[in-house]
Amino acid sequence: MLIFRLSLIICISCTPLCALKLPSYTLACSRNDPNLNDCVVKHGQLAIPYFINGDPKYKVPRLDPLFITELTVQQGIRQIGIELTLKNSSIYGLKNAIFKKARTNITGQHIEWDFEIPKIYIIGHYEVSGRILILPITGNGKANVTITDLKITYKYDWDYITKKNGRKYMNITTSSLEYENGRTYFQLENLFNGDKLLGENMLTFLNENWKEVTTEIGPAIGEAISEVFRLILTSIADLVPWEYIYPDI
Ligand SMILES: *[C@@H]1O[C@H](CO)[C@@H](O)[C@H](O)[C@H]1NC(C)=O
Ligand SMILES: *[C@@H]1O[C@H](CO)[C@@H](O)[C@H](O)[C@H]1NC(C)=O
Ligand SMILES: *[C@@H]1O[C@H](CO)[C@@H](O)[C@H](O)[C@H]1NC(C)=O
Ligand SMILES: *[C@@H]1O[C@H](CO)[C@@H](O)[C@H](O)[C@H]1NC(C)=O
Image 1 (tube, rainbow, N blue to C red):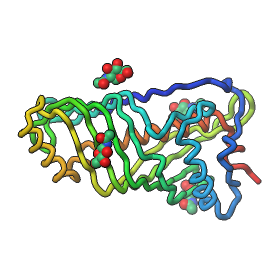
Image 2 (image 1 turned 90 degrees about the vertical axis):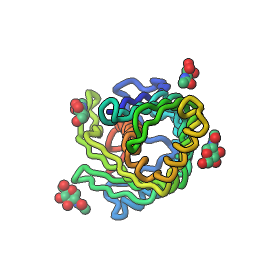
Image 3 (image 1 turned 120 degrees about the vertical axis):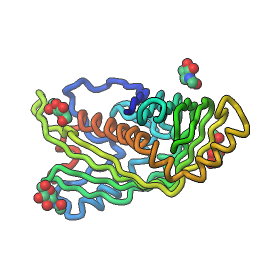
Image 4 (image 1 turned 30 degrees about the horizontal axis):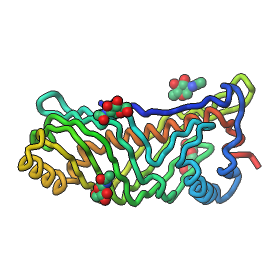
């Protein structure tokens, strides 16, 4: 189970039925371009430095750092499971994302995007209780989780809807995120209420078994990032008609 709250400050500068064009820093790609995928990667990469600071007009929050008010991961049942909450955390590093590949299937209404991010830091406040890979763990304090060589594939499908203004819009129906990463480093202050020996042993254990730990808690973090992608896409698709996203030129 995942509970996720993102604090978005949204300025409504566009009424529900106005039709925005893509932001001026995002060049559209023709749906008829024989090299559509190359165009998407090139234009997408150029837009990242602009998007990354947020764009209230398109309801895009600041993405680096990306502030997450609260992220709770509950896994397994009480006593043998784990509950981990991150509060007031900031994710740094998305600005260095490299757009690697796009696979665009307009007729199949399916798109896949591959990104690589050299390094991500998640800095915030954690609270944990339960068991991680069978070992009991408790604590709350400052957290610094470093993730290296992150490879993300984001996939989504859409339907078309026609709004009252007569224009056609994309409606994202399903989306998913797959990822793998090079390494994960954990720094958690004040584990076991500040018991130094237990805390240091646990950190050594977590860092030595980073792969298994990432497998256990990673999917929830992945889901949170996926939700961010979905939110951004959904708001853009909701504001910008289909004909401006992939124009028929
Ligand atoms: C998170 O931030 C809010 C608002 O700034 C603050 O009231 C709260 O105490 C913070 N929580 C933690 C655990 O730092
Ligand atoms: C695009 O999607 C359609 C319908 O699902 C499928 O028939 C077609 O093979 C797909 N094209 C590519 C290039 O994958
Ligand atoms: C987080 O940890 C990394 C090393 O893994 C370090 O380089 C970075 O400065 C730390 N950031 C903070 C805010 O402590
Ligand atoms: C858009 O897609 C979602 C998910 O499939 C669906 O719940 C929603 O009703 C759709 N919106 C419209 C206006 O059709």
